[in-house]
Length: 227
Image 1 (cartoon, one colour):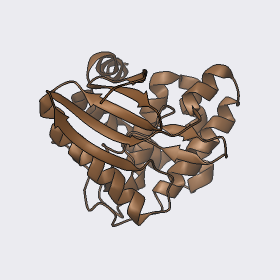
Image 2: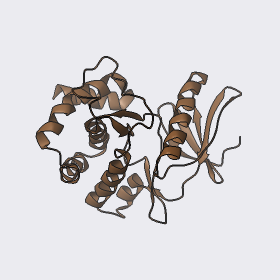
Image 3: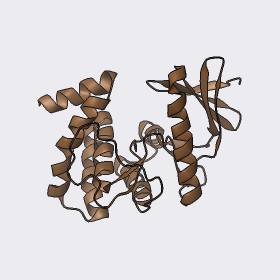
Image 4: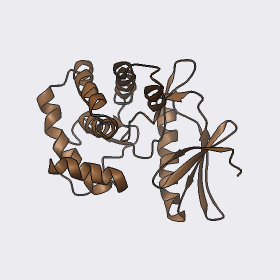
């Protein structure tokens, strides 16, 4: 398939826009299984929830390229809105929490528990709900209609919502300590959880992230553990 223009670059893939479609091209053929898993999770969540999620069109392996083709969503990501100062930091965080609450309101969608890879996270699978697993400012697009769309479901799983909170907290902390602290503050208000319970899970999730991350993020999480 032809590509019009590149719109995002990740560690293992690049995303292009082609008309009304987005095409995620994975670097290695070995990522075919990852693309299939993302396609399955995305479509399952789309079919079984009322969340705003792009339609998946195809996952294919051709000429050594793994392509994940989905609906292109018009609008700006929350990261773009932050950069352009279209919204205040608090307003952006409130939009993020709003969509996170919607995601965490569903359960028994994927039947896929959080893969700890040896990390013991307290009460991880107690009262499991749908978790996005990579909820950050880049993965939320605000459509011109005002609807919030959530992209990139490859890391989705089911676990206690505190795990999803912790993963989002560290995603935001990587961008801005101030935004991460606003998120922590507003999440407590929105969910009714205690600060003590949320603080308890952070070191456990940080150890997990240090194991799983690569490049700059791995160095960032390693530095956090050493502080």
